[in-house]
Length: 585
Image (cartoon, rainbow, N blue to C red):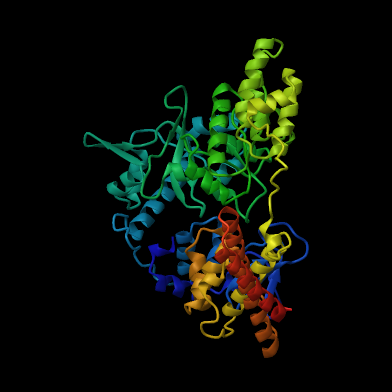
């Protein structure tokens, strides 16, 4: 991720981008003590819990536990990729952007800027044409679909002009070359002849999350084919990795976003007060698009057309969302209508009132509709197919909820259905009770583990604050928590706060980013004696836990193959632990 640019350059951009100044462009910050505080932009709250540390150049919300640095903030707030965020900061700081490492086959940035400029000029041309005689048919189409002029302006809708080379002629007069217009798929060349890629169509500009025009979709006027034509992939556009409408989802994460099938659905729903809608770009839903959506909201509501094709697309979409571990629900549009038709007939509020259902309920509903449940044979088939659906679930409470539904629908008892699902388990045998080894080693449930992790984080916080740790008294292997271990590796090698910033930039582990921020921003206002005592207590806690783990391993070994050496080692380790416990308490 961060390796695409020289690390020294990234450090320079980050150092010259004051986090307080950048975040203040999005929210009001008030200084209290050594930190700045404000209402968190990533979740709703009335009391400020969002803290920014100007010295450490990090932020952390004590309400939703999200943290990071100036780059992370832009990525979360503007839904940018890392490279987009670092480039944006470099431009603001007037720092020249170097060529990316290992990407010699990519067009230079200045060439891409020309393509963006050409696409923007095309969007303006199409929008201007819409309100001329040549665009009258397109404007009539939009008005007949109920789209008002203010909404047309909001989405930048437009129209192609008459003729085969109208756009080409207009843009070459503005100074764009034939090669540039071909590269961004505005113009095609066949048999030595040039012509516009879009003709006789209503035009929908497609924007990237930063608001730059990157492609177009065109809806044919009349009965021509294809009904919708989309830009091919270009150096600035990949249809598998973009969605229509993302640029309008500003202001941090939403509770959910609504995924619809087409551009017109997004436009029409917006006009009827249904915000937060996006659509795919003339292709079936892709895993890449789902990963992109996840940056905008924790949950997606699929609202496809109510016809058979739309319902089949929902089934496939749910499978993909599960593959990507992104929660999704379904709003079923009745009477085989599409969302655009439904809101025009019923209003935007009516769509919200339809609510949404979870994937399992949706799949079972589809199955139930495909069988005549008044017939015994059909009920059996339905029960067998429904059991296959329930096998997707891991939560026993959820499984039982749906088993009860199937009991009512099919007449089969719960035990039979559980066996069909394959989830019916016998009660655990009582002859060989499970031994909690943490009890043997002096633990009490999860509390020792909690104390262990807390001790690790305390030590990491001290190291991040520059508090010296006696040489060789602490090692990377002392840290078992994976996040603490990653941070310890940086800090014990002398990386300091800058090293943690680099770690944050180079990981996609959101929990690691949050942990780095929360641990680094702990205030350390102890006197020296208290500091030393706290450090030694934490180190002792780590050693005790390490001995506990060794005792556990030896105990398991002794169960399988008891021998005197193993028992002797357990006794020796137990004595060591007891000595440490005396010091600890």
